[in-house]
Image (cartoon, rainbow, N blue to C red; front, top):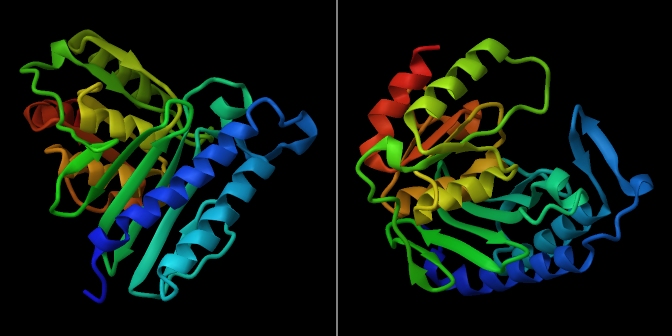
Length: 263
């Protein structure tokens, strides 16, 4: 590897925190005229775009040789060994409705492996991060997935696609199974934070389909470094491409897979 992820972690954390500070400063200032609808219920504003521009500029200084995969396509270069994968504002719909649950997500991929990930919860300034092989942390404190023994003792989170093109019956059947077998269900609206909450044990399980690499890359690494298991619905590692993800404390994983594969 041509670089050391641990050496660039501190400067990356600062860049992400600066973007989060900007996002927080604009809460409540975005008018309806400032909002575009990319597709059904998928919204974007100048805040997303400006935060992404800030991140691309800062991260480009940290690693000038790296390319970018970004949600708002500020710069999109996918053919380099080093690639930043960025969601400048994960939970835009929450943000625009002033629901305080949204985040900045930044991952660094070397060839096919994500080697560093950061998720910054904007309103509470909780920064979750991990370097591959070095464990997971939140604001300097090591974190681990839930140690509860049964699915009935933990919360399960999911999400729904920003499209009408999905199997509604299968989705609701899964919801029914998890409602009956878990402590409760949550749909909070920021995939990166849902993954981070699995990593710190606030959630036992998170699953969702129809996502993008920038929703998942950082949070998935953080879950794995916190001792969790991550896969797509078939148990494979292709979740960044398929957009389907299961993130779970290991003791729940087989039961979760069984529920998802029933549909």
